[in-house]
Length: 79
Image 1 (cartoon, rainbow, N blue to C red):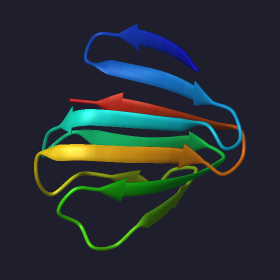
Image 2 (cartoon, rainbow, N blue to C red):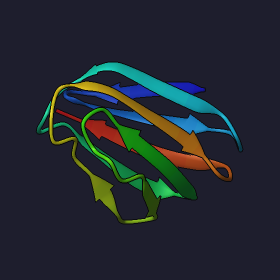
Image 3 (cartoon, rainbow, N blue to C red):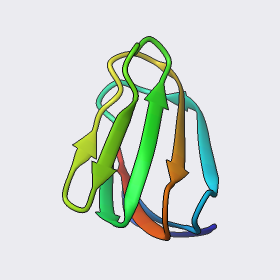
Image 4 (cartoon, one colour):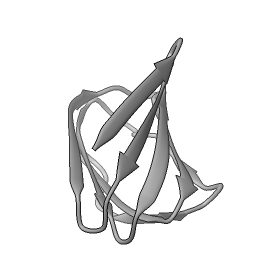
């Protein structure tokens, strides 16, 4: 996993099947898939989400968000 940052955004590269757990994600945080396919699940959300390039997800409530790369992927986390 590689993190790079410019201001309030972080780019993350994930390898296939690699997980990223955000323990204290907040509503309003944006997770955008830049490349690849991501599986996202979030506390308080009974649906899982599949993101492909250009799609984004915002948690509805504070809590844990787990992201898994279904293939090599790049994502952006923004406040």
